[in-house]
Picture (cartoon, rainbow, N blue to C red):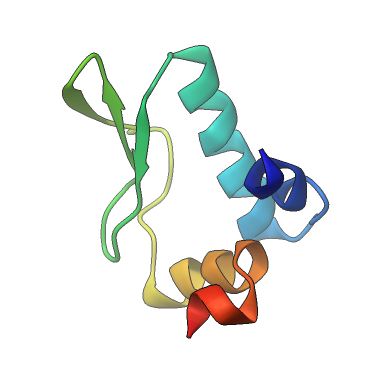
Length: 77
């Protein structure tokens, strides 16, 4: 829950995107969110991996921004 509340504090483009992914995961009852470089986000729904095709492909930079914004310095190290 702390992770979600920290995410919603940010308004940058990449952060808004991750908020939309989280909202999709909640609405679809997904158990996991998978983010990979050079790929669209994936959700695990009822044990099956589903691609969120309406989202852009993540770059290394966009993944790094997300990690930096949602993780503490200790978690990053």
